[in-house]
Image (cartoon, rainbow, N blue to C red):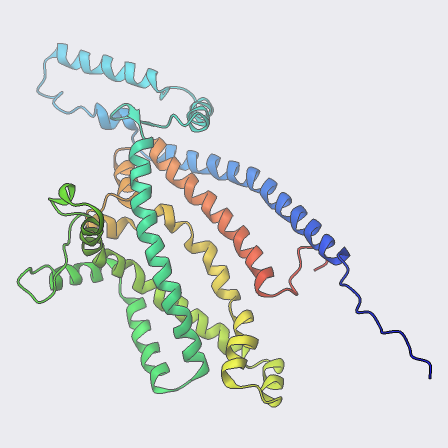
Length: 359
């Protein structure tokens, strides 16, 4: 009897993997290069819009305060000081020349407070740390709660939990954040109550004397209400998007086929349907990412939190062009980066999505 030699198991060819890697590198390079003119266009448009706003830093700094009652010499002194100020920061130059000086300050990291005539870097870094720390907690809470809640609602449509959660979340989504903030401040500001929260700043008066875990607890106690106000709206929206995406996917033919083959309900939902239903959530990721640096102007102002939201709105009122432009540029960069990350996540969620133009 002649025995056939054992059939060797062919090793998977690396050709497909090499093609995939080349496509990914080419795609990333193309997108990164495309970001440069896009960002430059955003900077130009933002600069023009900011400069079109009435008033400028010199008008805020030398706004004629006291000139009506001051003598002639005092008025001349103020006018001369304003003239020197405008010459120093090129506020009398043509718009394209002012833009050139701004680009120079941007690339040399020498963005300036016009009113105080000092760099903005230190204050901006402090505000960024606060805003990014709070928003990382907010985003984590939103996704950790919203995605399972949306999945459960889609897996059990028209159930009591689904109906009650839908009504509750729509009510939350319809409530403006400033209203919720004021209600929470009214309910939980009484220190004699069984539970209370501070309603101003991120730390108590004696925070400088606290270290380690005590300092963290003090900050968490102060940040609880602002985080709630920034979480509930996104939580309601993301959970409903997750439910809608899941409901659309579980009606597909391949889901019915999986059920016909005897797959359990949990396997159908978590293995077959979950991946494709994540596409709307991934798309929303790009729009949420800029909030990491933009912050919430309303919430930070109400609770007097020295984050990027309050930092930016104060700069708008003082006509601090460099601060406003720096905030807009950071938000734009994160938006472009978020769109790129979303496109990459599409491929990870569904391998049928390709980096190639034909795919």
